[in-house]
Length: 320
Image 1 (cartoon, rainbow, N blue to C red):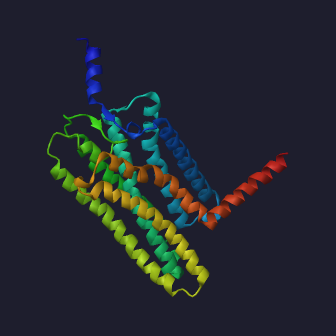
Image 2 (cartoon, rainbow, N blue to C red):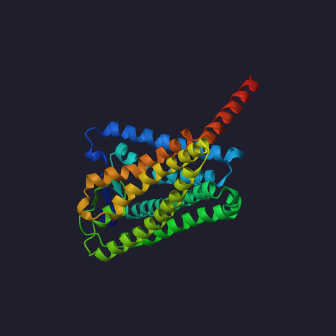
Image 3 (spheres, one colour):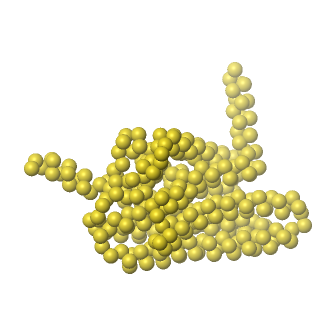
């Protein structure tokens, strides 16, 4: 056999096949258009939020710095998964090579893990701002919030560096069809022909720590926040604090709830259809909801947007 043909056949056998969302849909073209629109909304919304935060001096605070980092993570998260999925549908291909699969797995694990800890840092920031306002500048100094953000990225990368190499070095001698729309660890592990029970236990314990520590920080912070809000004499102050915290809790419930199902529920609860439906929430919907939650319900952000639009309109008038 010609060497080039043998290499092509061997390489093809190493490729994985992503079954994806579209194979489950009665209207794949419509679904493709909807996901493409959501992807554009997520990118434009998060980019706009980042630009507003960095261009407006009034938004140069720890809370908005955390929000800008959340937007950056959401942009990476959705960009790692959705473009590949859409291109496969358009080109009529659904293959992904082992290196591409490993890279996609590493990036989404890193960004997802980082977001767990960033949401905890955001909860701590709100706790200090509401419960200890007089000491806020000391407890949340520039050095502290940079440390919290860099720590979130570091811990997320540890998750990626730890789980990705182990997952991708297991032997895959069964069908190479991944019943998912991206290389998610549980979906890839189902293809292994070796005993993965020990690794699954390790992954479960890792996820418990990755979720338990941030959830403990978040729940503790908001318990103290609720007590403080209840004691406030100002109705306006209570309303503002509640609006800020409710926005954050919406993001937390969406992200942590769906992630808990994917990585901590027993396999008896899982089917391919359920797993893909749940994954849509934290890979596609959450990145488009976050900028809406943190911009439309935030007077500071909407004010910064109005100022930017007024500056642009004034500039256009002067040019005429």
